[in-house]
Length: 281
Image (cartoon, rainbow, N blue to C red; front, side, top):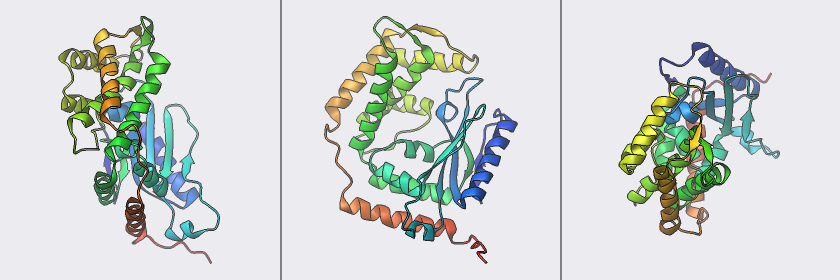
């Protein structure tokens, strides 16, 4: 039984559209989908009235399909139509990306908005992530994400679309959260929780809280020169990340790969154990 957790203000037609798309994917590809969640601004906690519905999912083929001589494609992509954006990763891809430090997998697992989630699968995957997620690899992910947005959007003295600030402050806050917690590697997905737990300077917290409130009411925040407090916060956290986290990110070791293989097989067994085998006659 898949659990759902959908805010009351989500558009019913959009949710029905996501459900239809997921049902079509299951039928067309013969896969199970143990995790289908909302990603993007709605799940991060700073949506606009016209925010898209960004459904992301993890799927699994039947175990015997992974024994094929011909490699399976490890993504399922569907066309973006209107406000619907529905795409997913194969379970094997999600595990490999996690081992290599891709924090997106963790964010999907911790999304507060669920279209359909096998909670035993999610709990097991999160426990596995806690065991194998490497802080330096995760930090490299957020550092690269933040730098990319900084280089693309932030220019000295030039106006910036204010909504773009979220995409630089969020990775900077995640890096700060990791720096303040030497034994942790899984930062909160929800922006408000992340900001509260990383304890940013009061001026930064106030500016971002104001932007969240304004973004919830308007389709377009407009453009302005980025506040110096925000610029300073981003620059400082990226600099500290360069000093705190390893410059060379280690590749997954043999023991981690073996652990990942066991987890992959265990999850396939869990996902398909009680599902009927299709009639191939």
